[in-house]
Length: 169
Image (cartoon, rainbow, N blue to C red; front, top):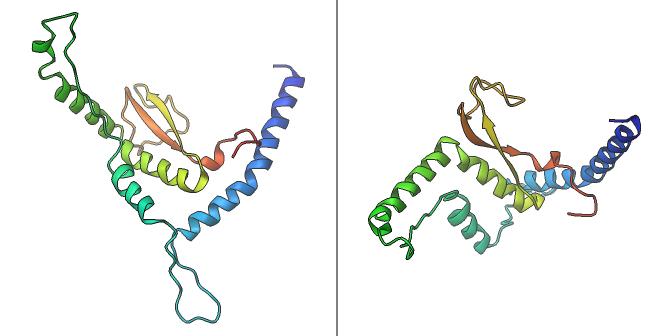
């Protein structure tokens, strides 16, 4: 890369970081307020304020804590009449396999965190990764990580670290 291009990209990254800083500070305040413990000078006890509406709490309870979950339904193929025999047990087997893979990848806590990030930061980030044998293909890779060698996985990415166009939220 030429020195001119390196300078351009460094300036772009700096501009994105400068634009992200006030947003990240606001997000940190919102996340801190999630404790719902607001101490007000002059009052002996803290005041607890519900910040989420009932429907939002229901969405979180029904969607975020149940998913990710894969639903699979195989249908008859009119072009292949013998498909009924083949597909009879395919749906439950493929569904079990897909959901077992999600469990092996330990997706649920990462998806839950991504959903909480979306509530406060307006975006949640998860990246798909592949861990080769030996586990040295990802940086940083810790030996205590939940990623399985020679398998797909997902990693949660802090929304504060994702540099987006400053003109977007």
